[in-house]
Length: 132
Image (cartoon, rainbow, N blue to C red; front, side, top):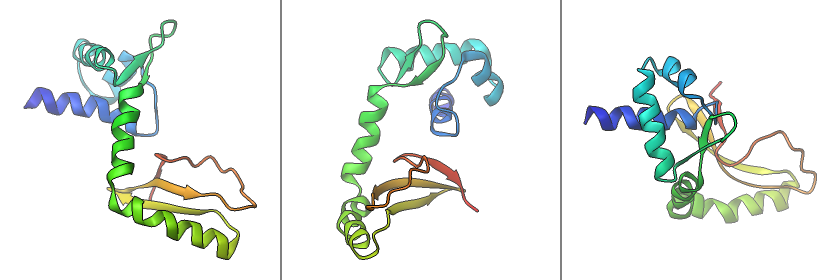
């Protein structure tokens, strides 16, 4: 179980502020041995959850990570129910409407409907921001 916890900790690092990591940087950030991090990253790459840039050797989320996350959005009752209400809010206010949840001490952007006067502030589905 300890190896599974370590693997999930490594994978979870890609859910934070950084979406790409080199082996050394990630090992330092998590206080883990470089060889252990390298082995785990390789396994996640082989299984399609991470991809590695051939030039920089940096890892980032791959298609299976997207597919897993999209299952959450398509199966989450809150997200399903919020869609029509978000659209109604946009119709009534003319402003962009968003659905966010508190996850630990972070706010996670789950869905949005853009209003006619959309102002791009960089928020995308899956964006994490500190709660304040």
